[in-house]
Image (cartoon, rainbow, N blue to C red):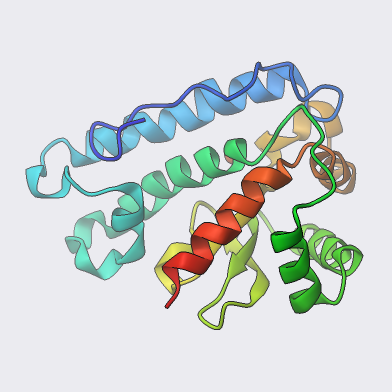
Length: 211
Ligand SMILES: [Fe+2]
């Protein structure tokens, strides 16, 4: 995808039905082709009259909201966030199980949470606690420690200085067609299709970014 305006919706790195039976084909199609596409279109529409902002990447648009014109801060937070969060979510899924988790990430999870199972339990509880629409994130903080955080709506961890390693979309559009109101079942199914090799790469990338 373009790193700056005009942004495009990158194709999924797998087919719509590839994550069956964990995440259904129709959900993936609507989530990618309609929800993400709308955020891409809205963001391009917002940036069209602002040539000085058109060279900025998603990360740059999201990392310093106060650097933006005041009237654009909320629309860009919502729509650039919608683009960034969804591309990140889709990129961390895979139809091909790739356990065990690579040692680099596994060791970091153990150091921060005590064990993988402790991290998983904590993440599930955190995801179930999200009120309304939002995301749960595994992030690297400024001390190079992994932590969990919740963001509302399409907010991202970038504006508060955290480096994203993994995210879980808990907006109802991410699971309602298949899992109805059973967010817990969706979370369990999502754990079955996480691309741990990609998450490990995200962690390594974050370690390099944080001084
Ligand atoms: Fe979503």
